Length: 211
Image (cartoon, rainbow, N blue to C red; front, top):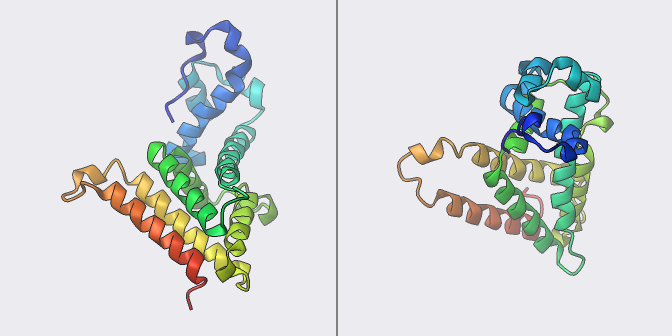
């Protein structure tokens, strides 16, 4: 996700969109530096604003960060909903979602990086688990797994472990792209990984929990 252009470079008619543009710029900085490493001053400077102008829109750094996390959660949920073809088998829906997640991650790994930063920062330690920003998305994805016949008798914890395993593998691979081209024998790695994920999803859906 490229940083948002400075507001001074944008036509005045687009001023109503500026809060969303601020959130996009903040998403990039929080992903690169983490919650504690990105300050309001950093974000304001990226946008060519004063701290006071940025705080006028969001009130606080915490409020801006919550907007950033909401945006990530919304994009994840949108990918999931777009895979929910009622005419497709559960296995096909899962394959569609994970292939889309991989494609989006390869195109722009910012969301994956931000999720990892959030987990490492452990900023939500004192907040109720039911308020965690990815909770609704993960609940829906677990339910999608449990729609597959091989998973209908499995406990939710097993489905959650399976989807976290796949999400983690895809996110790590996507975030590794700046480094992988420097390694020997990496030609074709993306397509090889895509094929591996496709096989893993089919095995997951068809075989159920691994004992």
